[in-house]
Image (tube, rainbow, N blue to C red):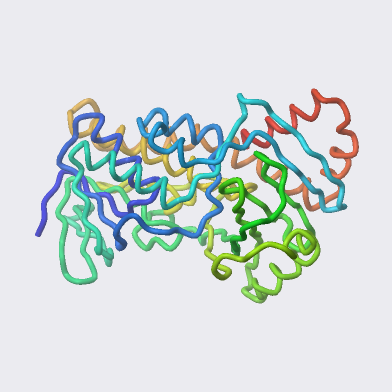
Length: 368
C-alpha cells in the first residue's frame, strides 16, 4: 500500500499537467501513475495549437520544448470539392508540431523536479473506495495506492471515468515519411469525402520529416482503415511520396470526443483529458484540452486540500471551468462538421480572395 494526498492515473498531457500544477501550488504528496516508462513514443499528429503553447508557457516548460518543435504559421486547406487555398494567420496564430515523446517527457521531468513521485509500470485495474467515495486506485498486479483525491487521466479507453454515456469515437491511422516536398512552416488539412466529417492531414515534424494521417468515423466498425488511408494517399499524395522514404509502418488509435461536456466528478474523483472525452470534435485536437483540464483539476483539488473549498463546491467548480473553456467550441464543431459534409466549405474557399479574408480564415482554424 502506497499513500498519497493525490493519485493521478495516466501520465499523458492531462495527467502531467495536473501533476505540474499541483507542484506549483505546493502540493507535494502526489503520485503519478502510468503503465509505460518514459520517454515513450505515442501515436499522435503532435500538433500544438496557439492555446497549447500558451498553456506550456503557463506550466513553465515551453523553453524546454521550443528547441524541438517545428513552427507552423500557415495552412494549406483542401475542400471536399477539391478547391484549395493557402492561408497564413501570422505569428499571433503560430502553432507548432512537437513529437509527443518530447512533449510528455519534458512535462514529466519538470513535474519530478517539483517533487512529484512517478510510478511507471502501473496498470490501473479498478478504483479503491471508502464507502461512496473514491479513495485511490488498485493495479492489475495487486499494488494499491490510497489517496485522498484521485485524478483519472488515462485516455480514450478509460474504465475509471464517470460519464455513463456511450462515447462518440473517431478512428485515426497515420504514417511517417522522410523527403516529402511541402511548403515550409505550413500544415495541410484535406477535407475529402473519403473521411468527412473528419479530415486528412500532413504535419511537418522537421524540415525533412512529415506525418500524414486521417481521422474518420466508423460507428458500425465496418470500414477497413488501412484501405481508406491508402485510397486517401493515392488521391492526394502519390506524386509527392514517389521519392520519399517511409519511416516505419502505419499506426492507428481511437479518439473519444463529445459535443457536450458531461459528468467529470464523483466523491474523491475528477476526470481529465480524453478520459473525460475533452477532444475537439472537428479537429480531433486533445493535447491543449487535456492540459487545460488537468490544470483545472489540480486547482480544484488544491483548493479542497487547503480548505478554501469544501469537496462538493471544488468538484462543481472543476466541471464548470471545463464547460466554460470547451463548451462553446465543442458545440460550434457541429456547424463546422456540417460545413465540410456539405458544399459550404467549398463556397467559402471559392470566395476567399482578399488577403484579410484569408488571414481571418487561418485565425479561425487556429482557434478551433
